[in-house]
Length: 213
Image (cartoon, rainbow, N blue to C red; front, side, top):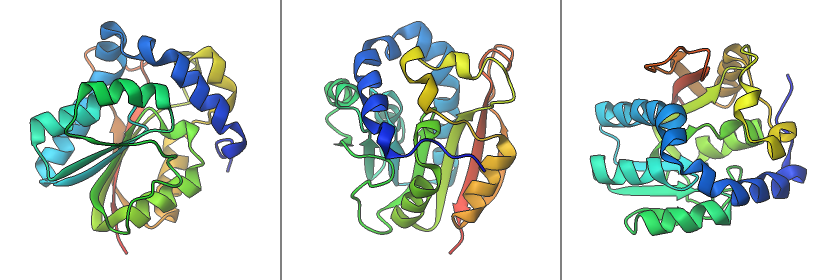
């Protein structure tokens, strides 16, 4: 199965998002592309009563800050490899623990959180290494929720910023399920993100799983 490019491309991905942090924060971009999956993630966390959360690939911190504000959990970690993104995230909230780390090496203790969430960032990670790290920092039975573009749509890659299109890989829903299961998770749900616009315009899929060992 193809994998995302490994850490040889880390600096390119990170520097690209450093430059694009302001565009990412634009209200229209957030409302159309990112708010619906964030709403879904918050709903999953609320219904499960999760108290310790890591948002991996948190960008400018909109989701992590919403989780802190709306759910008031015990702890929220906002993790991103881009210093430019985290500079804006830190200005957004002093209540979130912001971490400048890669998804494959988050630096948190074993079993530190009850949920790992990631929206529109997994395609830049080393998939197997990132999932192994998520498994490590999750407590037994912990929740994993990842939103990823569905590559079966020809629009999926066009939604990515041009400087980094060549370094992302989007697993299909079936490939994503296999990757997650191989990492020691049980997939409990997988479906398109619910949106008020046609799914073909933002073709993303939510995968929800639990750590089983």
